[in-house]
Image 1 (cartoon, rainbow, N blue to C red):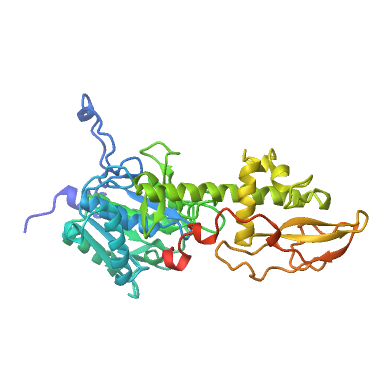
Image 2 (image 1 turned 180 degrees about the vertical axis):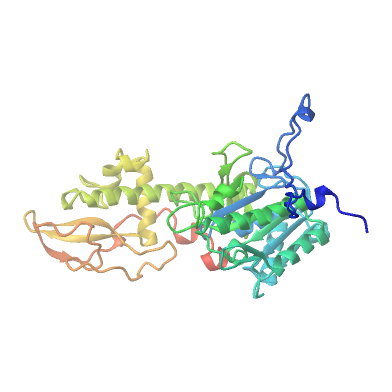
Amino acid sequence: MQPLSLAEVGEGDGRGRQSPPPIAPFALADLSRWEGQAATPKAFIMPGFVPQQELTLATGAGGANKSTFGQQLATCCAAGVPMLGIDVQQAASLYITAEDDEDRLHWMQEHICQVLNVSMSDLVGQLHLASLRGRLGNELATFDNEGKLRIAPSFCILKATIEHTGARLVVLDNAAHLFAGHENDRQQVTAFVNLLYSLCQELGVTIILVAHSNKAGDTYSGSTAWLNAVRSQIVLSRPDNGIDPDERILSLGKANYARQGDELRFRWHNFALIRDEDLPDDKRAQLSETAAAAAENAAFLACLSARAKQGDARAVGPNPGSNFAPTQFEGMPEAKGFTKEQFKRAMNRLFSLGQIETVKFRNTEKGRDVSIILEVLGRTPNAPPNASRPLCPDLPGRHPERPRTPPSYTTYMDGAATEAAAPSYGDDDLDWGYDQHQRGEE
């Protein structure tokens, strides 16, 4: 046997004891090699939004279609077709969901293929889908009593699956099923993120980790370590105005390799994501008309609510005259620039939808009936006009903040929307989309 070298055993201390072997330093960059060598810009799987060989956190509230986005991006990369108008890097892709079963994956894939105009056969060998729903032990790591990360069997299976498929884009849906630690523990979150990033380094893959945002309105849930540990975050959301229920926005929550603030607008349509400009002409025109009508309706209700908060004397009515609602609303800050004629159309639609109604009062001082408009609360666009609504002690069926019987009115008379002009078009002509269950939203 060859004797051990000093480097292997350490030098003695003169009293027969050996000192520990020297510790190797961290690998340091060779600046002399960089001299005269141009730095390489960061490559992207989806330019501007998903950097290559990085872990990107994809977050959003329930119903923002994060899962649809992940499966569609994986499909676009596998097929080499643009994602929402953006050229992507063609690569074998792996989409793993712990929330949907295989039947649901098939349903979504069929609709995604339709909107992208690709066939299933085009994706064989390039797109790989896996459902872990109902499988126990999906966590990729566990944590001991000291909070130290311990690799779980599912991580080894994930790594083997990536190697088997040759995937270069991996979408994991979602963090709640794969992360078994405490989301508010910075050490555990950071260790988990680094575990996933080790796959990026070792296998050269790009990983998108889908995660829910919290109810407080933050773009992530749990510790800020989720954002601090990743170099990229994308956020899927709905517009704040809520006018178009199918519109979606993709924005950069954190961008170390792109300009923060960039955003992409598109819509959920028939179980896939698509830009308005990519829709057929007739569908695009229909959506444009619907969005315009919804905007007019929203402005009318905003003006009505503002007048209600100003007191009974500021109530508006459905008939031409001094308190005619469309005339009174034109020019209000809440009107958003809409005109009297647009408010007339909105009033007719809202009456037809059962979202507003008239109430008659007897003005004993003037000896005549007075009609005012009230919003019917608790109504959704598809609910029947006679749907139940909240009760108010002093005015049946009304909200406490809505106009109440003025002191000079002594006789309450049940009003009806039939006194208003006929609506320009009815409920069936408005494309309100599918309900949440049909949408399959998270």
